[in-house]
Image (cartoon, rainbow, N blue to C red):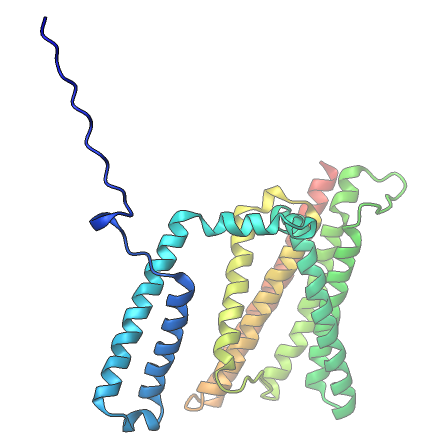
Length: 312
């Protein structure tokens, strides 16, 4: 009888032994080195003393900046490959009940954001009102009126979002649910009239919003982000929330549209020096009229939607 001899399997090479060992840069050390050497390289290019450095110092500085920056990207990719950053943030959020609710509950997060926006608008309206009284400025008074109507709209929406909201006698549950949505539509129509006063002062008296230096680019980025996020929410997720949450998002969309008008006036004031004053007036007139019409149409559509839903 022939006996076949079993060969013992070849020992596996450990990934940590010999040539199989992989280089894994440290994420904190790589980020620290990249920050230090990249800052030094930028300083060598943008500052007067950097131009006085010899080439024997500048070129190694560039090389170290590129080396540590590549190591930081490599370490970050390995860290993301090991565990998803979203999962890490989720685990951290679930360590506290409030942060866990903020992470999981979209409605609670939107209501909390609405409270923060109400506080910011209230401070802004109060400051505009005091400044208008102190300087006797119709421009500041018109801005204060716009922010006051906006504050009133947010306050009524947040107040109606409380679970213990009373129902009127003979009112159906659907009518009670869509009542704040209809109220928001009415206030948006009022807001369009308040904005019309701001647009008239922009066109007739040449008033405008002004942002110093590079602040205008940060404001432009924030305004476009708010507009795009409001549109994406209304297009993709409008059916998954209550009418009060939808009303708050409609208010955010309205403020984003108004921000586009203020951004245009600021851009024309900062970069439109070569544009004829008559052309700037027409541009502001067309944009202001378009924004007011959109706000009024948005408010009327909300009123009609609430009336149809409450009856159905």
